[in-house]
Image 1 (cartoon, rainbow, N blue to C red):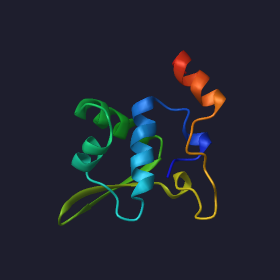
Image 2: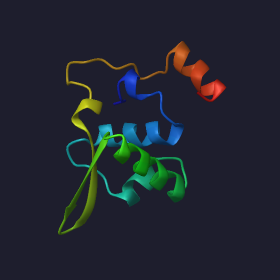
Image 3: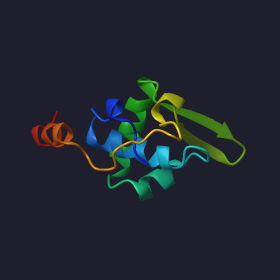
Length: 99
């Protein structure tokens, strides 16, 4: 599952982190799980998490077992909502231009 298009205009690692979190929205993920699920260095993942937290797009919860990260509810598509799995033409152009 992918995040809705309105949340894909962020830096590539941030979008990858959001996509990974949306795929496990109910369970959340640890930083280590995110690192293994996102093709980025740990520093890039940490920078992405910091930016996403500042933007209010993720929630971080501490429990006895450690820290789990969840996507904000507005980032998770509704169950009946179809979100394109393939990036559209505009997404491809933005990515190539670095926007």
